[in-house]
Image (tube, rainbow, N blue to C red; front, side, top):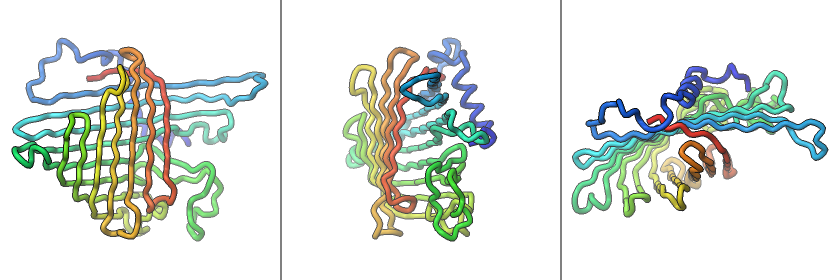
Length: 308
């Protein structure tokens, strides 16, 4: 992919925040105390890898990769209501010696994840099953390509192109889900939520809509249904935290199809105050996009900067 395809403003913000040394460590002692009831967590991470070979009999490929990410959470509890806002941004590029001369860079990871949650804790029944409103966004920054196959069906203008073939870009697709339901929270580190839900699949590029089962004349496919969601976040060993979330969406529009399933897993191993090892594993099934179970796995070691 060409570096010109990157949303330079967003990527620049990521790099500046992650690399600014004045943000390393805890919040400044000179900062005024927070009296609003909000608590914040914001951390950036830089990771990279490099491999070089010369006259290496066993073979190898020269590669260089770089990844930056930001994770943030803001939470406030007041008068029986708890609101939580989460943001995860990540972008990575990789360059190898077998890349095409006009495409020296390819993206290795690319994600925009945002979620907001408003939960009420009342008395009696509503102390156990808490009314909850939530919204969730999943998209990406830059163009994505299929380097091995052409997924466009016969008759589409792009069907005859040789790989690499563009299959995605910013807000193409974007998945937005809104829910209202009840949350069962038996432990601080574990929740289950059952909700009525609405899901929108947005594809702003008309040429790509056919890949996500969106009408070529419409930018959005809307589905109404129900969602079952579960979250788990706990330190399972000393300095090892496991965070997992599973979302199962049942569409009333397509009752004959299997539900959409998204299962995200993150294991963070804290080596010291600034060095971490992260393992990300994601499984996705959405029959409107693919009949296969889509899998993603990323292992990285990097330097973490606590911004807030």
